View (cartoon, rainbow, N blue to C red):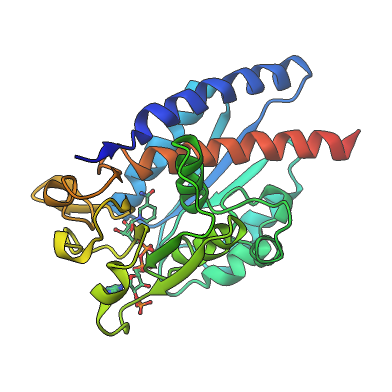
Length: 285
Ligand code: NDP
């Protein structure tokens, strides 16, 4: 029976440490502040933004929300807003909630966010720094996964890490983070043939595809570590990409959904906002 990787509990302890750091910054006259931009009416995005707001409140990070209507938001107005937030010395972190409507260019928007305020780690400069192994803002979900593995003392060195999913926000940054830990990394995606041949070789299997219960027990090696990034809604309930009930008897460690990767993602966002505030304080000294 696998040990459960309790992301909820771990995220809670990280938030407590961040609260202390936030209080220390405030004593020095710096009030960490996150600006979140939400364009359109996506219901999942609204829930994510609400959860980020709650986490900020708990830690003492100020939170400013810009809710833009899909019909009236142009590329120019979105870019102008980001530029204004870049210029505002009271804002330490800027987050553009994705997805945004298709008529808007998200790449230009991410490019416009000041890299020093890019708490989601999606500005190409920060993506490049990650590839070069330099200190930067790392995308929150992959960062949270690595943090979990560290906390549970799961060593990646020399291990076969198989990542299923190659999105810019999860799979791709994970490649670099796992390489930095000296893992042997394989990345699978929708065009991969005979997927199970790869997943069965994984010492550590990380799945981020967005298909409920897609990875079955016979696709997983005995005693593998299984990290389930997926968040799928079935009949109002959340399910991961992994068939948790059956795989939990075979894996050595497994993350639940909910309560696994999700809370860690938010904790890493909070971590990045505090880091941004600390860095900006150093720059203005
Ligand atoms: P994307 O849709 O951007 O990417 C999905 C990836 O999965 C793609 O690379 C795709 O391949 C691959 N894929 C799809 N179907 C298959 C298949 N049958 N076999 C192998 N690979 C496949 O998703 P995201 O990365 O944004 O999110 C993935 C999941 O993680 C979603 O459920 C999302 O809700 C969740 N998520 C959870 C977070 C958290 O905090 N817990 C944060 C972010 C996401 P291809 O590139 O070829 O199309």
